[in-house]
Image (cartoon, rainbow over all chains, first blue to last red; front, side):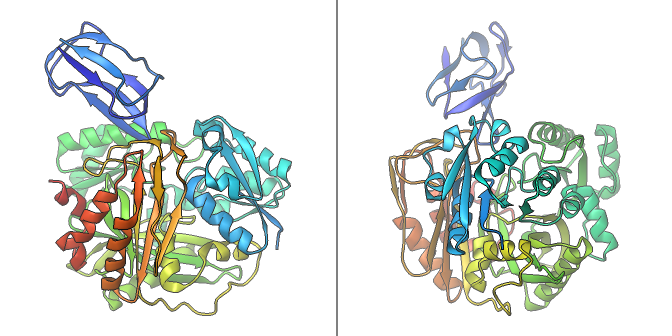
Amino acid sequence: MAEVHAEMVANVWKVVVAEGDSVNEGDTLVILESMKMEIPVIAEDSGVVAALKVAEGDVIQEGDLIAVIE
Amino acid sequence: MFESILVANRGEIARRIIRTVKEMGLRAIAVYSEADADLPFVREADEAYLLGPAAPAQSYLDIAKVIEACRATGAQAVHPGYGFLAENPAFARAVIDAGLTWIGPSPEAIERMGDKINARNLMESAGVPVAAGTREPVPDLPGALAAAAEIGYPVMVKAAGGGGGIGMGVARNDDELAKAFQTATRAAERFGGGGEGTGPAILLERYIERARHVEVQILGLADGTVLALGERDCSVQRRHQKVVEESPSPGVTPKLRERMLAAAVRAGETVGFRGAGTVECLVDTDRQDFVFLEMNTRLQVEHPVTELVTGIDLVEQQIRVAAGEPPSFTEVRPAGHAIELRVYAEDPKRFFPGPGKIDVWEEPSGPGVRLDSGYVAGNTVTPFYDPLMAKLCVYGADRDEALTRARAAVAAFRIEGPKQNLPFCAELLDDPAFSSGDYDTGLVARMRS
């Protein structure tokens, strides 16, 4: 199981995957926006999206849990 | 001369403009969003007006609110700074229609240079050299592929109305072009930059590898004369955005400089340019040749390096030109060397943004050091705006002295809280290619490869 956390304060611009989706290493899970820049959040392992904790438009803080990959 | 100026911007540039406005004995009016209420520029203005919530669309980009701020505060003129509404012809018109003085070029000049395709075609017809590229907007991917086949790879893909490097991408083959085209289209739709009704027009241009990005500062006077105030080298870039600039450019010979300055004056004259603007070029140092990239019809972020080598306050000249007055100087005689380092709230390795509360902020000082900053300790750098926290500028009698002062100033600058790129600045100043002056726009990528 791998937890994916936010590396910075950001707005959630786009949620690319849904709970239950299979993802491969390197796939984009969500796209954040901070300081006029799009920042893709990438799956570091292959697996299934067991939990997705953010929705489009959310403001997230550094360290917040974004998703859990199993 | 008008008596009051509203500064329609935020952060370091609002603060810097307010300083000159007050030095000229005029009343400085700031506008701000809820997220910026504690920043120095709000406090240092003679009067400050709350525009609205943090989101730029509901504050700094809301033309009606800024015009209302002018009415409410009795402002007589508007300085737009850079970014936000600075190159929006509809805003310039709204200011003029409200009976106020617009501190900038005419809305027509902004419009003609704002569309990068139009600007390139116009410059080509004026005899200014341009890179091979599309003369019409590229409507779709098949169109882009056909254009790339004609121009030849590598190509640069850009949004015609875009700015600040957002959405730009290099493509070396058809696959990369498909990706770059999508990125540019999305950026054009999201961040806009163009006026109302402009679609996500995309252009393709031949990409010059190992080029330097050199720009010429121009100033269009009230009597119609256009002057060139030397060049700035902006080749130190990450994600096609500038990090460090210097003047003069170590890669430009006196002969090439003369040609570039003459072309920049011609570019300004072609659009009847008034005020401060910048003609951006790509320089092929091997061939000592250049092509026109685009014209910025506003004050540039990196204007301090020109101010340091010329001794001319560019904001003061903008205000004087807008008031129909002659400039404060009689001749342009650049001397010495200046370097600007942009201090961004981003990590120094991957350059990802890292906003946060500023716990420690200790500024460097000393001979030849100028700091244009937007923050003090206790402020918070928020994720709503671009990551520029400060511009650390140094001046020296020559490039070596400027480099020595820059290294000392970077070492003395202490910021804790948000992520910050001072370690990158230190690394750059010690990099053999940068120290020697023999570098190009690929420098940062090579440092990180």
